[in-house]
Length: 565
Image (cartoon, rainbow, N blue to C red; front, side):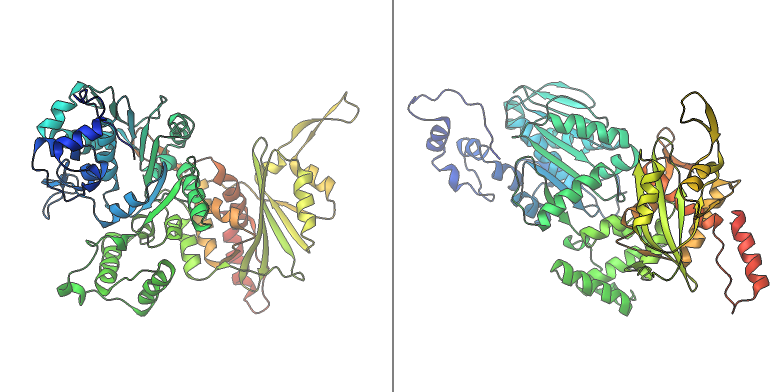
């Protein structure tokens, strides 16, 4: 990372500013290491020309850290900033563009804000921008990271680069550089861009995430720096797409260009603080299955998770995440893949699918050619149509294929279904399949009223199309879908896109009140989820001869109403 300083013109015009500074200090810049202790003003001035010394020495920047009895948001202990081992590993692998997927409380926001301030102070005419997910988070970053670090700088540095403008969100320095912290997407041409908690932005404010991607990120020159850091927030959105691309390149060991993002992952066990003290380990019960989990992580990640760390993880999960244990994957991931398994509280089906994974109901599920297949549809007029392919085998409801397409006619879907070359049972359509619309006749002079189910029956007269009645309460249908998932199996390859739709089906977020609405968000996840709901509210399983017919009919009738939840 190249840096420059303003210097007075040297008396000896044959010497460069660096050579003159080295002569005055009596030492070469290359000899300055992070523990070097300057003994004079000239040596201190030379040290300031070393980015490594400024960041690593602990003599320039100060930060606040939490005391044992301090509230989580009120750190009260002032310490010299020196990168910890995890941060050092990150700094050793810096790239122009960086994507950081991490566990909580690892100090990366602090590190990057120090780097941002350093970049503005020691480089002329640089625009530094930090984007946080909320206004409150932006204010906190600015006040507790940027302003605090600047105000605690040695006086000589503040005299060298004073502020010429300072308000509640921005500092402008005498060298022409500036640093701004904001919660909104913006244009401009930042030379140093930090996007904090991009996963939260993409999950709760997708329009803002698009503006950041198309605006602020595109404004950074090729030689500039971008830092995108976040915990995970589900399997969709701008951060998910960015991180998965970077991860794929890292796993393939592909060489990176200046425009590529380097993938950095830091699991919870990298933090030495995440460990139960020896005296308390015996109070934490770790069963054989949990030890097997840690052993698997050690094999996958080439790491060692000792007993104290294992006890800390189990204690954290059982105490802080007792009602939502799956959130441990998001907040304290052990592997990159585990991050994306996590759900946030607005997701309708995440827990049911997490349980299905733990019970082995998502994996390789064979398609049996001698068993009839059913389909469950969501019809899109101006957006996507989605179809699930299902077989009933014994008492198991197996979902084998999923297909979704936007802007295609019904012929595209019937052609795809024909390509599966299977026996057909029934095809379940949503209630709006019976809604008639005007359709121009072949001669062009007349119109007829025709519905989607009429079109499909005309196209495929041998197929059995059923229309699922409309449920009176959508939430009841969602609740019933959750219950029906307990007996379902999914082929993870044939239903990959559909599973992603189910996992990301969520409530709408109220940006004004900062809470979840009680109705679903209409997005890409809606179509596949609505199609699956036709199974839960409309499908009646065939009665097995070994089951009491009267009880089965009663159960089926209750299930078909969509009101039993």
